[in-house]
Image (cartoon, rainbow, N blue to C red; front, side, top):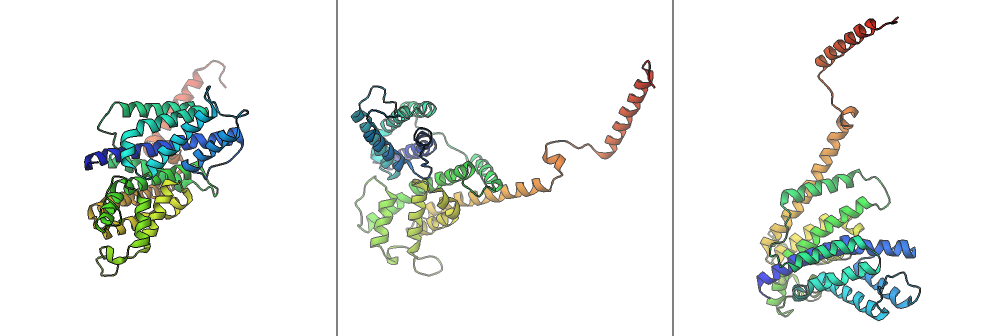
Length: 347
């Protein structure tokens, strides 16, 4: 693939990843909870789809699946193709994504139909239609829009005092995992491939799988393979393991790890990007990291400022200037007295 084709495939991959984690996974979790009484909140797309595959195999006659006349074998093939779509996205197989993104979406739409998730199917169909129109320009979020969105996410997270897991924590973790997935796929994996190719540790291709890259780097590389930091110390190999954890947190929706360690994840991604000779990638990742930190600070300032306001302002009511308020009250009071005295039978 050319560099341009790789960039286009990565944009498709980012879009599909969000639909998988934000639409397909919640629908599958809801199916297992409502229909089967099983709480699979901690499962990612991979585990959920394999659970559905096993359920279809074990329940031939008394199944809760809406097979719509399809045989168990036909349903199994659809679910297996949905799993293939998930694997190609999570392992950045760009040629497959370029060729089959609409087919992967079709399998997810069919899975949504099997579990009765009509709204999810409709939303996935809209995305398939969008991809079918061969539109080159994907919708982009401006930095200002992203910042406003993340301020809202962090504000809700800071106000969430629930010790147990909550939807607010889910939403915050998903938003941060989207950011992690983006920088790993778009800014980190390409230069990492180039480094490993240069040292003849992998063959050059357009499957830019960060999992495989990091696995090889951890096993076969030494500090000598990387550019030493500016302070003259040897490259710290432990950052490779942290980047691997960041990849797992994003791909496998490890929400607890994400909320606890996201700052450490971004710092290690920046460190390793510099180590592999990708300063531009390091700047892009650093810019996103700094915007997340700034959004959290702004959210905390807004919460603190709101708490300092009088309760009447926090409730959205307006307070008039003291002098005007007093004159207005006297005017209305005298008007009310005169009106009352003019009434018949007033005492």
